[in-house]
Length: 116
Image 1: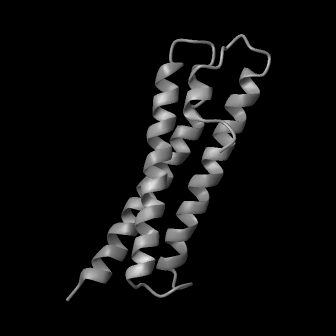
Image 2: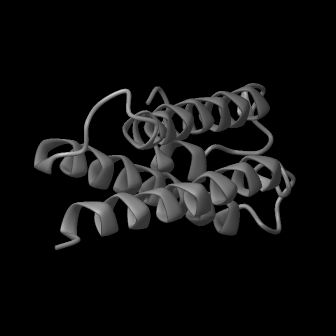
């Protein structure tokens, strides 16, 4: 990602490009989460057949979405009283929704794979 959690946490809200940095960070996070959710959806919709390798890809995709969610929560918490407060809310809501979908899809795939 172009901007890291550290960069976004410590950007001064009075900096000329603060809102641009936050917007880019949020867009990149959403794009990455969407890509990872797409991997899970692709496996569940039979674009690829479920096997150990595909389950590992699904697990990695789910972990990535979890990581993005945790990172956005940390950044939002850091800025919760500043002028950048609220700039992360919509992105967080969308990523939480994606994480919920990823968790459900992964559980289903895992159940299919481990079924005897």
